[in-house]
Structures are given as structure tokens and as C-alpha cells.
Image: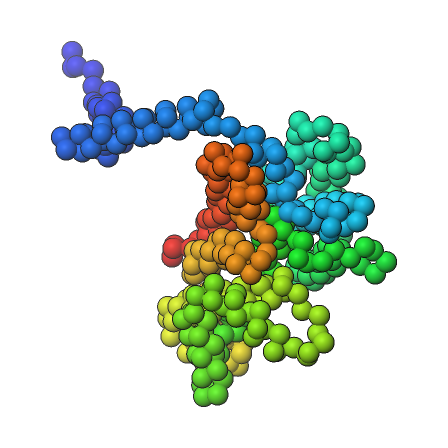
Length: 411
């Protein structure tokens, strides 16, 4: 009898230590003897730092200074008796927060993207969670808590408006600009309302206002400067180059000092220009100069053949720039643009040098004015560092998700 055919697969599985998590650890952390030693030393140092850090955070640190400052971190001196007689202006920043949450919901409903959904839900949830802080009713009344809880339905209302109306991106941008201007007017005091001088604006509210305004304005200004620097018109090119090099060559601190003298010269003598507007103008122009170079780098990285093909198809120069070159350039420099926006947000803390109480200066002034809290300076500035990290990491996360969806770095 002939033997039966032997049809079993003789392929052996790979060794367990060469695949999966164990394989990655062996290849990347213990590939050689000196890799193993370095890994063990770094792991021991990290474990010690983590242990002592957690012991300090949960046992030794006194976080009472954060609770003592409380709402001052958010709005500074906005609702004090000097700024708002009667201290009944607390609801204005919270209404602005409701507008922000609503527009985040509208962006979620309009784009239907996971990024917008995640950001919108996190912001609305965090704002609503602040209503449950363990403060007494005298320090945080029920009206404040209700307005904070209203962020959850505001998110749903924004989502429903975008999903059940014929809203376009153009109208979303128009409504966003109108809401920003309305927010500024509401904080300053609309006709018939008690005005709050901008000298009392402070806290995280001030940082966010300067950052949002600077980000929204510096990108189009930077794009225009980049295109102007590449222009064939000598006058336009020289003006753009001069602007970019001047603002890139002078420190932001110096420009902020100069804003108190130079910016008013560009407006009529009786024009009402406050310190917040001056700081916003300078921060925007400073960021736009760097943004222009980022965009110019993206434009120069494009293949010249694309412009030649566009001209061969009969497209005008402006059509080639707006429809072909600029979208690809902006896509390629998304990491640089996100980095510039993050730097702009952190640079808003420099406005303290012109007498404005941003969130960092609020904490520093409180420590200097209350010697009994000098020992808690570490806790205070660790908390402030965490606040800035949350916002900057959020911007970085959104940037990475946009890069992934647009296929940046892929062909």
C-alpha cells in the first residue's frame, strides 16, 4: 500500500520573544547589553521621580492656594466692586462661555468629525463639572452653578442648529466672527449695561481672548504677507519684507512696551483704544510675521510643474494661487502653523509687563501680596503649568488629527 499523502503545514510559529509586545521590548530596549543597562537606569530614575512626585502631589503639597484664588483664575478682577459696582457682572463671562460651547456644538454638527465631537464634549463636560466644586453658596451661588450646567444643553442646541438647518461653512465663519464681536461687547458692556473697564479684565479669560483673536487674524494676515513677499511688484514685496523682518527682529516684550506709544499713532487722537486692543494688535502682527514665513516655506516646497500645468489649462494667476498652490502649502505646513498658534497662546502671558493681569500674573500678584502663601508658590505655579499644558496639548492633538485626515506626509 502506498503511504497517505502528508499534507500538514510544517511551518513553525515564530519564537514568542520575537513578536508582539515582548518582541518590541527585546528589540528596542534590550537589543544589546548597553541598551539593557541604559533601559534599567532610565526606568529606575523614572520610577524614583514618579514616586517622589506622587508623594509630594498627594501628601506633602498644600493645594489650598488654588481653592482660595478660585474664580480669580478664570476672570481676574472682572467681578470685583471696583470693576462692577454691585458685583452683578459675573454672568457675562459665563454667557460668553455658553456661546463658545454652542459654536463647538455647531462645528460638530457641521463637520461630523470625531475631532470636533471630542473637543466639544470635553469642553462642555468640563464647564458643567465646575458647577459641582465644593464651594459654599456665598462664594459660588446657585445662579453661577446653573449657568455652568447650561453648557450641556448649549452644546446640544448648537449641534441641532447645524444638523437641522442649511448652514454652510461660510455662514459658520460669519456667525463665529459676529459671536466674537458680541462677546467683546458683552464683556465691555453693551448699550444700557454697566461698562467694565478693560483694565479689570484678567485671568484665563484675557489669555483666551487674546489668543483666539490673534489666531483668527494672524493666519490670513500671514498668508497675505507670504504672497506679497513672493509678488513681482517691487513696492508690495519691499513692504512685506520690511514688515516681516522688523517684527521678527524685535522681541515681543519690546513691541508690547512700544504698543503703548506707537499703536495710538495709527488711529485718530480721540479714538477709544484700550490696552487690551493694543496688546491684541501687537500679538497678532508679531505672530503674522512668523506665520508668513511658515506659509512661504510651504509655497516654495511645491513642485513648479503644478503652476505650469495650471497656466497651460488657462487658469489666471490668482486662480492658480488660491485653488492650487495655497491649499497644498497650508496642508504641508500644518505642524508649523500649529506650533505658531501654541506659541501665540503662551506668549499672551507676557502682557503682564504692560500692567495686565493675565492668569499667571494673577497668581504671582496673589503670592507677593499674601506672604502667608509664599510656601505654596510651588503648588500655584505647578497648577498654572498644568492649565497651559491642557490647552497646548489640546491644540497639538487637534493638529495631529487634522494631519492624519489630510494625509500630511503621505503620497
